[in-house]
Image (cartoon, rainbow, N blue to C red; front, side):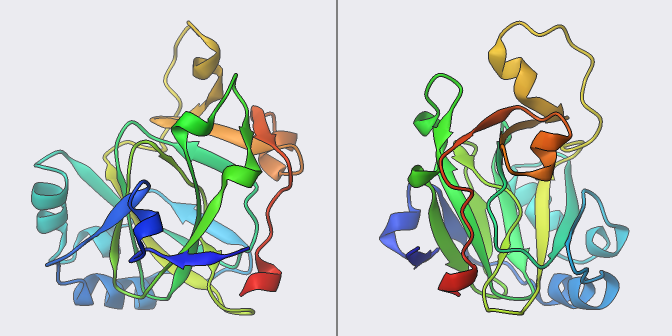
Length: 211
């Protein structure tokens, strides 16, 4: 699978790299205060990251004053497994290089997305990578064989918390697995086995041979 850079033209439909932010303190906290598991661990809100100097700039500049949370997604991974989206952009900032597997919301047809539409993008350590609301994404992937990743995840406060109580008004409502989180799973994924909506068709992409 071809792996583009988030600095390439191909990334423009999916997001952009934000400039002007001092990420040094955030990266130090991410490196020193968060674990690197063998699998993948996501924590939606981590005090050690939220108490860094960059918090105010991310909340006020990047999100226009909306309340935010800063968490992390760390570990080792090379597979797609699922794609999710939110009703807002997400920021990813890694203390390591990492790779994102992305698709576009308008590629969902009748509740299904062909994984042949997925593209891979490499982000460098310290880049503030904005992933648009219309971009489907999931856990980062390792950028080098055998290496792990540590990636800060910035989202509006409450995202990925408990799923709201609601009466499903349409099929999309049935894809919701958490607050502000709509998920399409591949049939081979653990999420599908746990009951998540199976919305990905085609190969469950694995980039292990491409890194």
